[in-house]
Length: 429
Image 1 (tube, rainbow, N blue to C red):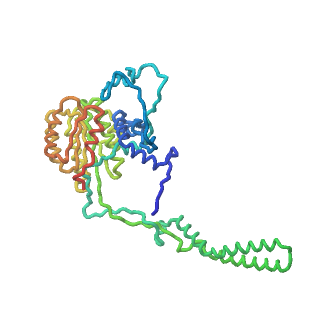
Image 2: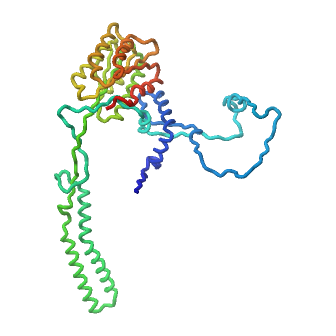
Image 3: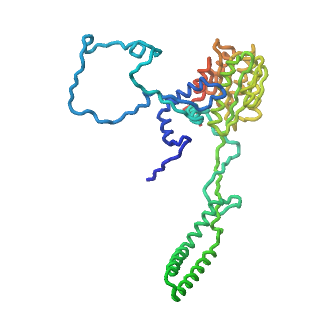
């Protein structure tokens, strides 16, 4: 049996394996710290690493030790106030003296601080998105087309010149020359040592003749070694590649955000943080996924990432303009037979009178039949608006493909995000 020991070092010259084991052991505490950080950070540093504190009571480990053994007798001081079975109240304040911690310092006692350590940005994101996925991601192939992926498959002795692996070829040539000339090189070393021994003797005619003969033999052997070609056709190695059929599982996520005048700055910040989480989640977990950003007030517009998160444009509210633009983009660029389609929408629920019915019809007729999943979050502390009422009707008809949640403050962003994109045990293909 073979064992492979990973002794890679991280930036602090610590064992990477031991660190991963430590993070796995205290996964629960780290996830709680990450959730707290997500709820309290701003948009610009939401994905940064940070400090994690573990309560000292949770880092103690059981140990084996020798007990006292034998029979022992101990005498305890008695008292007149309590008998066996009595219960007494613990002093208020937690310190035994009725204080709450702000009192004068004590000159007695000792303790231990909670354990605090740093996690990197990658580790922070790993814990942030642990257990999340796009629901119902289906492998969809283009019609009459099989996609292939080229993968490395070792080395071969034949191939095109542009695939020559120089290092492997030189290594093969060196090994061949060493193998073919090993016997001659050993004989040369023995002869040279014998020549040195003869030269150390007193000069005589017999020794001189032997030295001449030995040097002639050395030259013959060196000439033989030089006749061995430096590189041979057999030495040349080529990178070997194979084509592996890969099913196409392309996905696109539409991010739709209301930026109308009814969306206060605090509500816009909550919406932006929700979409920042979504964007980081998509970038980290899916290499081949497209993201479409749509902002709207009375008119909808497809924008880039920078404008989506940081533009200050505002106006009235017509939600159907964004849904119409989403449906048009779907029709033009993302056929449902080839793409996994997802839509996430954030709004305060306020909408122009008479437009909510149009939104419901658009969802029912042009969007939901084509998408895998549509998630809607309403950011408001007041009563639900007419858009929420209309979306409830849509949700009743499309329970598997349509999800909706309310967010009242920033602390609810991360829990709602996890509810929307938690792993589904059924429905995935």
